[in-house]
Structures are given as C-alpha cells and as structure tokens.
Length: 280
Image 1 (cartoon, one colour):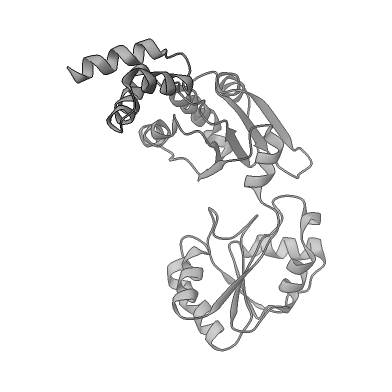
Image 2 (cartoon, rainbow, N blue to C red; image 1 turned 180 degrees about the horizontal axis):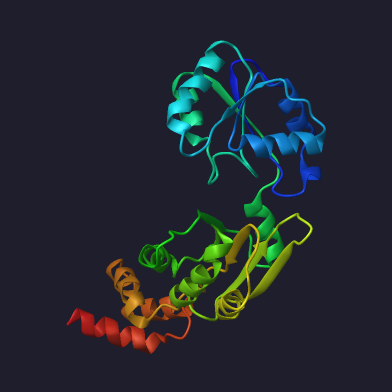
C-alpha cells in the first residue's frame, strides 16, 4: 500500500504489459497524484492492465521536471500518495525522477521504490557477455565528435559497457564504437526487448556495424559491449615494483624473480637488467 507523504518510484513494463508487478497495479489504483512521463502511455498501460486510475495525473518529463517538482512536494506535504512512472522501466535511470527524489529527500520526505523490469539488466542477461562487472553509460552523444570523445576514454575499461540508443543513430554509434574499441570487440544489440519482435544480435563490433549499416534498425535499442581485455604489463611497467622491493631490503635478483613470476611474458633477466641500469 502506498504511504501518505512518501514519494514512490515505480518501474513499468519495458514492452510486454504482462510484466507489470502486482505492486505497480495497486500503486496505480491507490495513488492520489501520478507524475507520468507521457500521460497517453500511462492511459494505455492502465487499459492493458484493466486498472481504473482515480488519481490526478500530471505530465512530468525532462522539459518540465524543474517547474513541476514543487507540485509533487506540495502534494507530499499535504499527505498525498505521490507516484512517479515513466514510459518504460525505472524512473531516474535515463528518465525523469532524480530531481524529485533529491528535492523530496532535502525536504525530509521519504522515498521508496517499486522494482520491476529493467532494459539494462534484461539486455545484459541476454547478451552472453560477462555480467559480473558492468557500467551503464546511458545514451551516447548525438554528434560524431562528442560521441568519439566519450568512447575514447572507455576503450580500456574492463567492465562490460551498456548503452541506450535510438534506432536512427544505431549504425553511427556502432561504427564509432568499432573505431574506439576495436573491430574485434564482442558486443550485442538488443532490440524490442520483451515485445513480439524481440531480437538479440551478437558478434564483433565490425559485424554489428555492418549489420546496422545495411538494415533498417527498428525499435528500442540497447547495446552491450564486452570490457577490454587486461593489458599485459611491460618490463618498464614492472620496474618500479622491483626497485621498491629492493629498497625494502630484498636482493635485487630475488626481487626481479618474484615480480617476473607474477607477470606474463616478462623475464626475471629483463627486470634485473633494467633495475641495474636504473640504479646507475
């Protein structure tokens, strides 16, 4: 049951309305005020779920979030049950809601979340790419130069990377990823998740960029990119560790052997010679 004077964020289905939780249905029925990213989408969802909404429905999106957040705070102060929903998925995550959460918290109101479908986690689970460590990067910039400036610092990121993208820009984004991350980097493009025409394409960035360039890409898009393989340390990279061990009292030859054992492709002899030269 929704609590009076508490701001509630509720995840909505990302495609299939049958993914709606029982808690979401009850929240839609119980709310006094619903802040919806798209009021028409909310009406369609309510019809699909056969929910009768009696709450005041307020349009609440990125272009009016600042001016309408005080209205939510007024409702909370009056003890009303305030609910935020977006078009699909979880509010706040690449969607409106953060400004309201921050303002409500600063004013001493409680906030709670009704969990549910997530395009990020659904795409990650279906991608076949390592899920143990990942970073959600949201929507890449629209312009080529800015897009490249975002991708370049991520080229050596070892975590799996997840992006949202418009179908119109998917080809350009995959091409930019191929240039920044390398043509052989594994990736997956998930489209229309949980919907009738759901599709997950897997391959290298070169293969996926070619596919997008020769296909009319349709639907909501999530791109999952494998993290960078760890770079093998060079002898020069390991030199400082050898010298540090030697400074702590270890024989230089023993320090070189110990550091070489923990590296790939670097010999104790290389490290020893570099350390001797550095000491001269």
